[in-house]
Image (cartoon, rainbow, N blue to C red; front, side, top):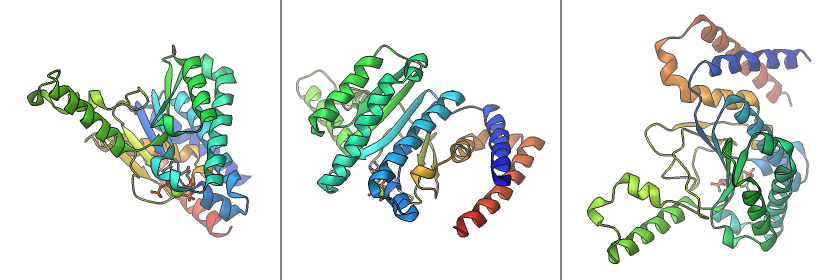
Length: 282
Ligand code: IPE
Ligand code: IPE
Ligand code: MG
């Protein structure tokens, strides 16, 4: 109870602080740790994926409130095809269910949220492909916020396809090799017909410090901040998102740290201590 009050207060303080600075326009998230979360709390791993999908819903709400324009979430990598058939089916069913809810949810339409899938969608089971198409079609005219779902996505494959397309164009004279620069490469990077803009902030939950073939081109510009955090995806909270945004904003911060920021910093270390104690005790 006391913890909740402190948490809400801290969340509000951090939200106000973060809003004073530049909000990243594109956040990409590697949502990792669903199975470890399930193991830790003693539930079936299937539910770990379901809880994870609920977190994704909440994160979309928070990003919308904060004015983030693009959110790209890593839901299933090409490497994930090597998981058991049963687990793949569970994950695909969760994605279908969540996409179906998104299409029906009035918030999607009020926010004019455009939903797109990136990746080798053609490798997915038919019912998931149909659902993806349904979600894309239902939101194709929207531009309020973009939700990009990376499914059957692999960054190297995306780059390879771009290289092959450019090579074909050079061969038949539609492109001059001397004209190939970063912008031209970026212009050829698309999967499932969609191109994803450069990422401002990449977040990975679950404690591992690697990017697992996610947006290698778009998330490696000099402006992209990276935030790796310990919570498993189902337990990712708004303050974790706000802290990540604060890392992105850090450069602006250094110049003029005001009193409120310092108080927020003090609160942060206090809550971190309280959270640490809570986590250690259960
Ligand atoms: C992320 O959680 C979801 C997917 C990769 C589909 P994991 O399933 O990788 O869970 P952990 O990382 O093994 O705990
Ligand atoms: C990364 O998680 C991919 C997704 C979140 C979809 P993984 O659990 O598959 O990644 P690795 O194997 O730890 O790199
Ligand atoms: Mg994992």
